[in-house]
Amino acid sequence: MRYSLLGGGKRLRPILLLAACDAAGGAAERALPYGCALEMIHAYSLIHDDLPAMDDDPLRHGQPTNHLVFGEGLAILAGDALLSEASRVLAASAERDAQPRRALRAVREIAEAAGARGMVGGQAADIAAEGRAADLATVEFIHVRKTGALILAAVRAGGLIGGAREPALKRLTRYGECLGLAFQIADDILDIEAPSSLTGKAAGRDDARHKATFPAVLGLPAAKQRARQLREQALAAIARFDARAEPLRGIVGFVVDRACAP
Amino acid sequence: MRYSLLGGGKRLRPILLLAACDAAGGAAERALPYGCALEMIHAYSLIHDDLPAMDDDPLRHGQPTNHLVFGEGLAILAGDALLSEASRVLAASAERDAQPRRALRAVREIAEAAGARGMVGGQAADIAAEGRAADLATVEFIHVRKTGALILAAVRAGGLIGGAREPALKRLTRYGECLGLAFQIADDILDIEAPSSLTGKAAGRDDARHKATFPAVLGLPAAKQRARQLREQALAAIARFDARAEPLRGIVGFVVDRACAP
Image (cartoon, rainbow over all chains, first blue to last red; front, side, top):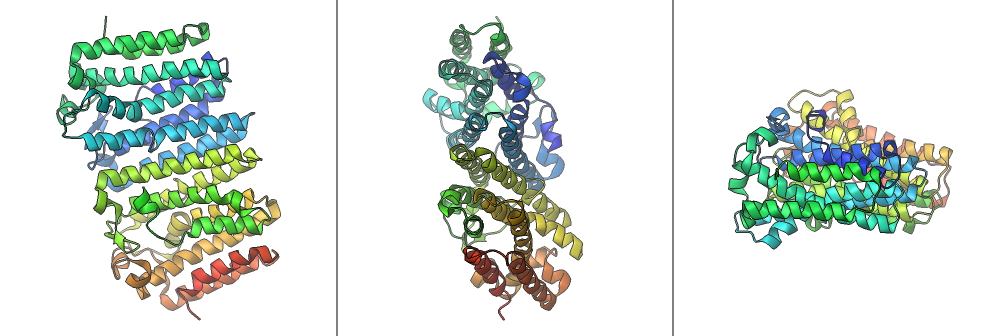
């Protein structure tokens, strides 16, 4: 559990949650345990995705994957235990929250985004699409769920915990949807253009097996164009927020620009 | 997810939760969604336990195991999604509860029992003990976690949702501890004495590989004696409860008597 949770990564989801809480006018410290739970969910999903029965990846963040170090049985269990621990931390956080019902809405949305209607559903659709020529609709269907759902949940949960009302929550939702898709497109671009140096993945490996990527269906230039467009849409969605939304603005810039440098 | 969740089983954990809620004076219907979540957690754990990297079992409830029908990748994801869905149902139930903080305590205890300090920790200890001669302390350590923790959580969560105060909760806890251990001993005995007819497992298979069972370290007669003793201790713990505890009394009788018929 520690090996994979603490073994690196950008911590995008917890940072997003804290930034959204901040933007909504809440104290980011109150959102911290929810952020830790999100990172546990993300870490568990990577452990299971890397298993031989799934993507069969030997490296993650430049290190041997969990099952290569501890064996498949313990890797499956480490993932299971991280997801369980995330649920425990979320419940304990909501229990302590001054507004437990509002916190529970955030917890419920995170759980929904992690499951069959979100991340796990996207991963299952990805397995189903393997080896077939994917069209843009299929690629979007997969990635809105596989990566987008948890990113959106991070933004919405941060907003909810920060006390955002419905209009602000709606804007944060639009921001989160654009960011989630932009993140996946950027990730697909980096897999092709800077495979091992930035992502720690074996060069071209992922792309060769999975066709369900944006560059594969759109071509690289159009994929970059799409990512930049999504960045502008995300920024427009939160244009009315004050300076406390600067971290959110910075994040979408970072995510898109590292793959589509101007 | 449906194949394994709806494919049979005794529904012991949800029934226990409803019975404990009843015994504590609550309305069992209010506890129903929590019971569904518990069964999802149980179903996920069986799918993952049966995987080739774990117990490598071909049959569950007399039917081919999930990975033999859907493949290992989807079986891992079905388990992951069931655990996520359990978290979602628990959060949604607590959100609707008239006393969300009390409900959250039940949710937190269920999540803790499912994770590294409970069920998953027990499974990991079981893997670690494989191939070694186990003593009674090791067998108890494994089974208190692997099976006992979720059974105890079912009883305590039912009590909490039913409105039990601390003294009643303490008695229910004692009942749940004795029942959890008795259940595992009975299960180990049935694996030896009635392997395929009652449990749907291949004859003697589990026992031949894993030495960490009660009959293996105590011998069959002493294991049966221990189970009967635990039944009496469980009954004594809830002796002060009124007629609404009859289902709890019936359950421990059923669990022990089917393996240790008088």
